[in-house]
Amino acid sequence: MDNFRSEVILSGKIASPGLVMGKAHIFDQQTERVSNGQSNSGDIQIEKKKIDHALQKVITELYNIAHFAGRNAKDKQALNIIEAQKEITNDPDLYKKMIRLIEKKSFNAAQAVHQAFQTYINLIEKSDKDFVISRLPDVKDIRDRLIRNIQQSVMISSFHKNAIIIARELSPTDIVLLARHNVSGAVVDFGGLTSHAAIIANSMGIPMIIDTKIASKTVRDGDLVVINGPKPELIVRPNSSRKKYFKQLIAQRKEVLKKEVNDEIIPSTTRCGKKFKLRANIEFEEEFKNIKKYNAAGIGLMRTESFFFNDGESGLKIEKQERFYESALKHSGEEPLTIRLFDVGGDKLFEDDKTEANPFLGWRGIRILLDHRELLRSQLEAILKVSGRYPNRCRILVPMICSIEEIKLVRSELVNAISRFKSLGIPYDEFIKLGIMVEVPSVAVMAEAYAEHVDFFSIGTNDLTQYTLAVDRGNNLISHLYQQMNPAVWQMIRMTSEAAHKKNIEVCVCGELASNPFAALILIGLGIDDLSMAPIFVPAVKRILHHHDMQQIKDLTQQVMEATDMTRINELIEHWKSSMN
Ligand code: PEP
Ligand code: MG
Image (cartoon, rainbow, N blue to C red):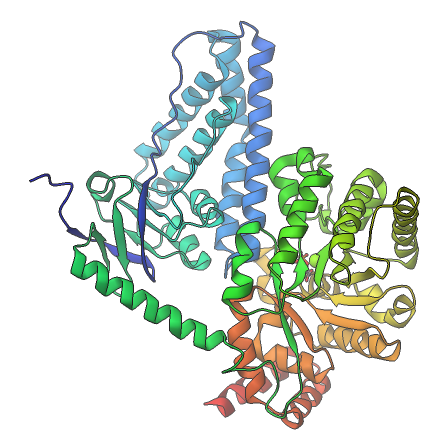
């Protein structure tokens, strides 16, 4: 009988836990074929340009992936790995080698990349240090990306729905991209438990089995496979009784999750009945499904940098934006959709990337949009158009506001766009709300004045923390100082909330702080009952909030507001945790 038809159980190691069943997709990661012919273009300059262009594209890809990883990974390791890959891509020696091969040996661009990297790979392979050897997949990944970009081929072909990826090995960047393509699991022949890909799979929540040795040779494209959760095994082509068993088990687990997120079991109220809203932070289309899955109340923060990064300028086409916003609205029930204007710059790439000594204190967010009005106008137009089809649903959120003048400029662009719509008879939502991110201390301390000019505040604690404490949010050397619950940050939040209430405008929190259950209690205690977070955190935050009544919350909040150092805050957290047991 054909070996490829019977059930096989492979064992390996669990790199990332989870139980999933799906169709296998064999991810063939062999080096892209590089033609042996001489330079096709016959023009050295053109071949050199191809290298420059591919390098730029790969840097963009890495920024894009880092951006995605940063938002979704539980830790910063994913970002570090991608940082290291950026360094390889920018290595001047490698670049010189590639150019020399084109100039002196008439190599075409792809050959030059392949040859230059081969020398580098040979060196790594000779190393006796595990740490150096473990970099190999990352280096090969960059080589393949460059060649792929030169050959303009597509990185990932279409996957089966909820595919389980089977590969010899996977690079960290592959894992991030796979997550974006909705794969439900990954299995590799090789790799260690502390390999980079394993770390990222874990933080992205993708079940993964490693070290199977033969998975990529045993499984065929389209085979049904099961990653068997608690056990370190991959079941290939399960027999009918096992298939039935896993189907039931997976359904049971889904049911448990559903119960956990279901409002009937845990309503969005405190124990004493005060209502709150827990919304979703969303950036990629792939995440829309999580709104329902985790029962979030619509989208409290829709970041819009992603499709800008993905497609460069073409991603900005108004129709494309409209489709994205409309799709977001369809996934958010009757709830409002808060669309944040492009927040590029800082750690988020902008095509005209300028070299800045302090990018986080530089040209980012609204500063770029006011210098590139065409971007601002195109986005306002797309949002307005969609708002006409979905009245009372869209809200516009402006990032990185640092002055009232900036708000006035944005407001006047909005007013101009509206009068254009009026004169052309295009429908739009005449009550569309304009709000600002409160993520810079100057805005928090003057919040009352800012409240006169906007319809709502959204507190971005990720940036508010870095700007209040002078701690770069992406710098590992000082990550212990990056404290979103620092008393100074709490005071900024309190001031903002008080100002919003005094001036009768809405206020919400959309930074990572909102996803911390203890912090969520304090935010509610400060009168902020609209919290937005990665949807996966919604059930746990809801459970904790529902467990407390307002008196307990108010007492806790008062203690936090009286704290003057982190030691006291940590004591309060510990005390609270022990009271929960
Ligand atoms: C923030 O700064 O808290 C925020 C939500 O925005 P981002 O993380 O996109 O900068
Ligand atoms: Mg921010």
